[in-house]
Length: 226
Image 1 (cartoon, one colour):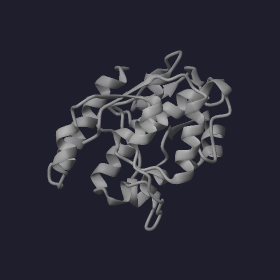
Image 2: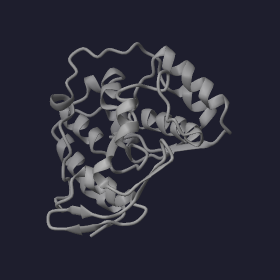
Image 3: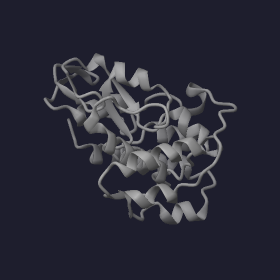
Image 4: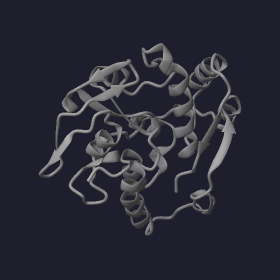
């Protein structure tokens, strides 16, 4: 059944809660977990701590794992995002086999009619999150980050071409090629970093300041992750 991502995310949230139950979670983070926050775009960048990046010890598979099926409905995280973001819903058969459907890749203003031509992009890449603070997290929290369905800004179905051009770059060196995507991508990048209390490096901060200055001010609403 193609349920909204917010409902499907309940399973992921439960998994995260159980996985973290045996881990030490800072009291501040636990208290903030259910507290929605709103900050203006042009003030949000200043709320992000600035620190140098460090990729020591990073390995994508061992650090974050792969896609999971948190609610055990047969559809892993990739399939859940494809179902949620479909413009024309695909047919779902068997163990979540998708047939047909169309999608819109807003990074490059492209309509796609084959699920296999899409990648699910971590808007803030896994390597970037590692560099920005995730290296200090528990493995369970990193797996939760890699499969986060509670907020549709975190995982995005886009053309494989645009995702692979982006790779693990931040806004200082890569932005979506579609002109209309700039302000959305900037705001979403900031929201993900705020949600997970991740840092930004000096070049990233300068790029975000420059990008945000060309965008109309807007409120960014986010809920700190546990």
